[in-house]
Image 1 (cartoon, rainbow, N blue to C red):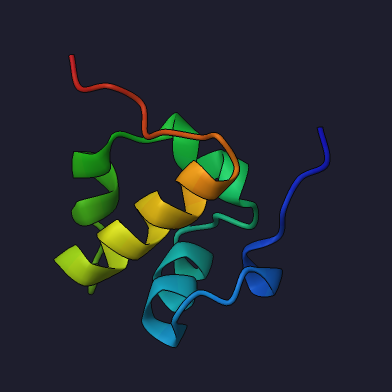
Image 2 (tube, one colour):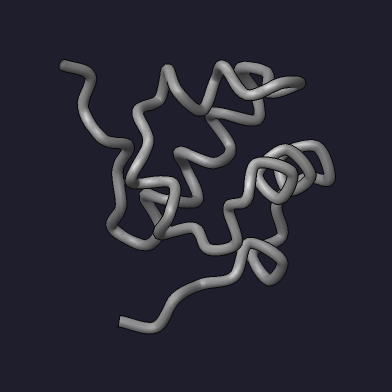
Length: 67
């Protein structure tokens, strides 16, 4: 599998900045987090979480399930 850099996905500046600030470089890394984990990142709003979730689904990825 080729890793997809978040820089090349056309994410909004806010979504890209929050992921980058939290050390996430590839969209595949988001699958290691729950949706709740991502939403708790500083400055991450509902729209950005939904945008990331939609982008992940384009690559057949989902957030990790909450326990």
